[in-house]
Image (cartoon, rainbow, N blue to C red; front, side, top):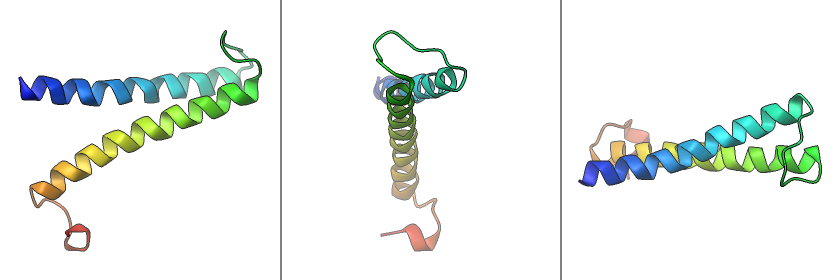
Amino acid sequence: MIRIIALIILVIPGALAALGIKLMRDMTFGILQTPFPNLLLQFLTGMIFFIGGLGFVAGFIFHRDRKRNKVQPKFKK
């Protein structure tokens, strides 16, 4: 049960990161999505989603590896 909850916790930010990539790609091709008034705002929102989602997943994995002592000595507490 705990593994399923951990998977869900990782899937939601991963989906946000994928949405961010899609929004940035659509801006590159000039496709304006519905809730955004201009392309620059769409690109910035996509960038925030991508960086936030990727950062959350990377932080989760780093925290888990640090708990299990699988990181380099300079990253240990």
